[in-house]
Length: 376
Ligand SMILES: *[C@@H]1O[C@H](CO)[C@@H](O)[C@H](O)[C@H]1NC(C)=O
Ligand SMILES: *[C@@H]1O[C@H](CO)[C@@H](O)[C@H](O)[C@H]1NC(C)=O
Image (tube, rainbow, N blue to C red; front, side, top):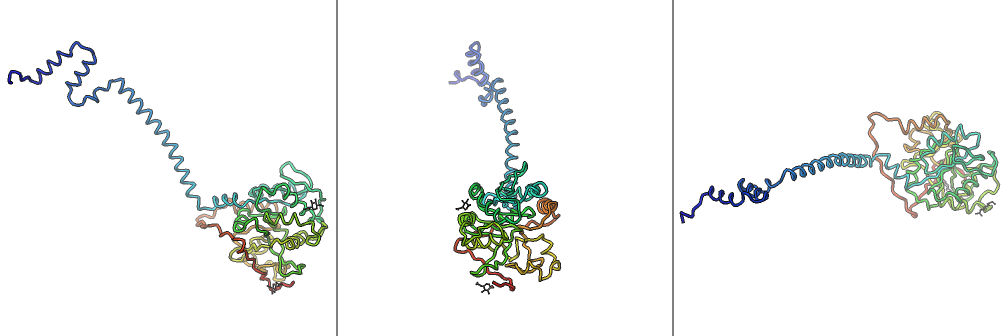
């Protein structure tokens, strides 16, 4: 067998002879054979390598560009997550869940000096805002009434305004807030106060005054100055029932807020308790200093005699989440806005807030007056 034994060199030579002079492909194969055991890598031609390199670089560039976008998306998603517990998103959620239509009673005389300033401050936070007046305006969403511009027919104007809103705008909101052109409303706090209640409950809220004229027992009506808010159901009952002369005053005169309170009471709309969980007032028919400075008014101050709840002044009588103040001058609207929506108190820990529980229809409880001067 030894004569048949051939060396590796001989074998290589024989095969070399076999393939030399054949096609270039064959020569390649030989090359692979000679170079040992990594044929596949070696078989990549320069053209293939070039294509591979090109694909790699395109992929890298694409990945790099995509990475940027991905990082930005991830970061902004995390930002949303981080703020989900803070004040703004909860208020934004309530803006959709507790829709408030505001309407402001004004006259052409005050369009430019009061109404536009309301629109630029708290008014823009209502889901909708309309100005009830006797002439249209280039800057305001007005509802022009047929009743004359007179203080004496305020009750008549209120009936006409609510009727118009019910017939044309009732689908725009769940709650309907009436304010004067010198009222300031903290709309976010109004939504927070209303959140537990269903707009299908016949309810209205405001600063509760004692309703003296009522022969049926203890009841309250809402101060016109700090404004009052009707549920969708209360609006429906009011507009459908206001022509009943045994329940509501048919003439247009008399005190608008007292007539409104009497009429709503007779129509089965309940006067809600607008105080917070610590029994502090959220609506106030004065500017805040009248309440905050306990020596500003004596106990014989008329307001304390007519108050249905909390007939006194003190630091702690005013809610941390107030809803409305009255007698706020136009320039003060901007001061309130600055202090509440822009001013930061350096180093103050943000408050952890959560939504209150919903009140089921059978659970509604309205406490009686706590004013010991109360007389029916
Ligand atoms: C009215 O409220 C007062 C004080 O809470 C109470 O003493 C009185 O019984 C109430 N009257 C009616 C008719 O509910
Ligand atoms: C109430 O009376 C006014 C004026 O007469 C009328 O326009 C309105 O349709 C009446 N409302 C109802 C519910 O009947």
